[in-house]
Length: 311
Ligand SMILES: [Zn+2]
Image 1 (cartoon, helix red, strand yellow):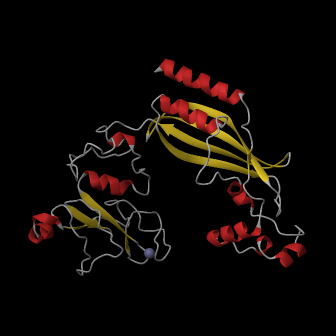
Image 2 (cartoon, protein in one colour):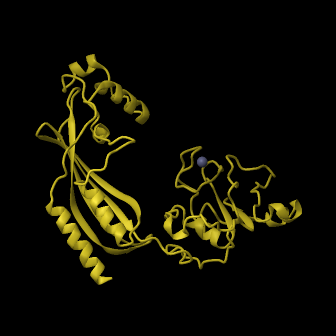
Image 3 (cartoon, helix red, strand yellow):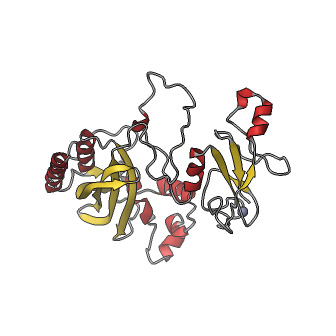
């Protein structure tokens, strides 16, 4: 293992020494139609991006592109050709060769040096900036590496983005979820494994966060735990920090916590299931105390012996 780590570091130093990749030239110059689509999708109504008259009278003296869409101009498209000089691909290949086959983006830092104007044609160069590892994470052992993305207009740098990802070795099938605080329950697989099914360790499992931990812990003890908003009383699933109905943040405490929004009011749905027949066993339907069903298919993918709807 130590030898593998040394080899990975040596490869990273070699890739860093290569410096910036060859430039990826934007397919099109900065242009209004793409800007219009982007600001519509984002919901940015600032007229300095779309109204030529307004922009002419502004500090910019003319239309400019939203800085946050810098990356858009040099995107590779659906049929990208491989670039051997790309340090991201090289570093990914090194880590995958060593067994770190899964990936998750962790964070990015942006610097915008100036606005870009219609007609400018940007280019992107990428370099490997940093490699840290191996680290033990909730997802498994992995390496963090950062690429520096630099956008040029001609020879001038207009923006940079440091993009960090974690390449990790997924836990082998049966290793269980490290992040859980509840012992792994013996839950039979929902369907028999087929010969062509991917290895359970080769797929990215859902990430357990402070907002969703209560739900996954419930799954391990065969409980379907459903949140109820303390502000408006709406049941909601999948779990999240904010109520989509009223925007409230209260009522998201884990079940059983004193004074929290969950205080574990149990609905014993297993008995209902048994009455409904064996075919539905293990897929209880959540019901409110008045007998109505929660909305938006809240229980459709549940496999649990009982349902806890928060109060
Ligand atoms: Zn609410």
